[in-house]
Amino acid sequence: MKNLFKEKTLIESGTQEYATVNLETFYKYVEAGRVVPYEFNRGLFGIDENRAQQIANNFNPQSLGCVTVCQLPGGDYMLLDFHHRTASIKKIVILRKEYWDTIKCRCLGINIVPYEDRLLVYKQLNAQKGHSGMQTASNQELAIGDLVSKLLKEAGYQWGDITDSRIQTWGD
Image (cartoon, rainbow, N blue to C red; front, side, top):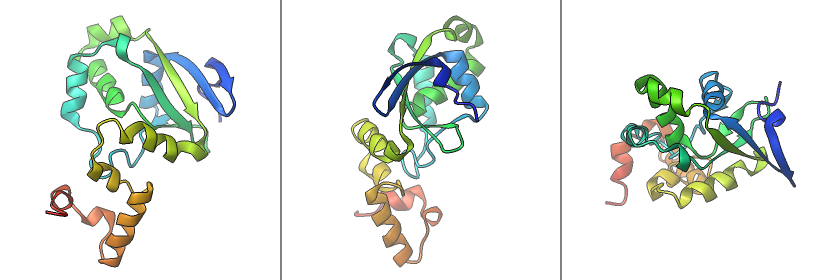
């Protein structure tokens, strides 16, 4: 499978690669399913649509930052960061078409980390950036998520059995 960002790679440093694409290309990759969200981003809580809309309403392409992804074994990419900004870009394309036409050519940095480092990088990027303890705890791939998963299993539950409201009352 073709490496989407390889032909755009600027620097290879050890095992990390850096690339640039324009916003339109990034959006096309997302829409085609070639760049996918991390399944357990924010544990069971997922994207906050209000936050994504707020970012879309106040979008500043100069403060985009860099997307961090890992390449999946099949050649596609998984977001490790940038989930809300990706959701906001989707909203801009649909709801602010004229604005999209003015920013879609802006460059976006891509930080490509090795697949085997994805959980460590995800945890480092997101544990300090507004993810609550419960969001981190309910991520079944992180160490604490493994512990919570084990406790749920011992109690006869699975991740999908527990609703957000029930999780939020733990420890009360």
